[in-house]
Length: 261
Image (cartoon, rainbow, N blue to C red):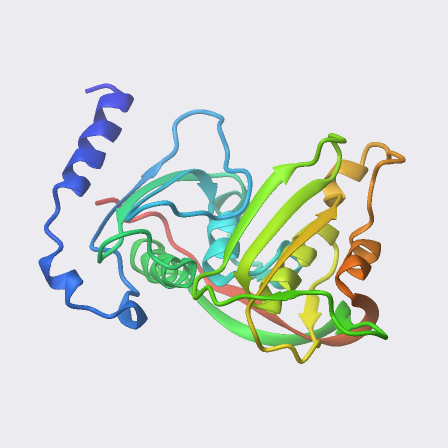
């Protein structure tokens, strides 16, 4: 059977899986996939971009363990420590394809998907990790001298739409019904070299727009159109201040070869 036919067979099998028991579960206990296939990736395609989920069928192609752990625990590369006993190629080089079905109807919350990935990594790779707090350079996201310029939202679900701005350099990111913590996460992704901690004290959900350049677009050469994320938050009545703070770090203690299904 060809590789494409095998993947199609897996997808069809997963789509036909019964979900009656999962429908009775509340969102808060969806921490395990109903069924999941994990296989070594064939080819050179590798994952790129943030973890997104559009329906109960979750497809991840060309992910390394390094990338899977970052997505599963919602951390950046500088928040990972790897035990010297673990071969580097097992973490950084080998890639995997995952096709899995989340329980319940509709697209699961991203927090549930992260918990399911954590359990899947534990089951299939016997992954063991622990948390450490390590002091490092951060940005503190605070309210500026005046009030924050954010529109209060009644939406219960946070949605972030990311598009390339007309200048071809900056991201135009539209937030709908989002807590400020989500903005801090996105700013951390844009800045790239240090985490952003929400210290605004704002506890609501808001609608707003952010236009700024991601760090990776400035590596080759900057452009006059580039908007520094540190400056961009000023349009929202917020500030990013350099600081030092303890940051949660995931230390990978143990990893074994894939247990295929």
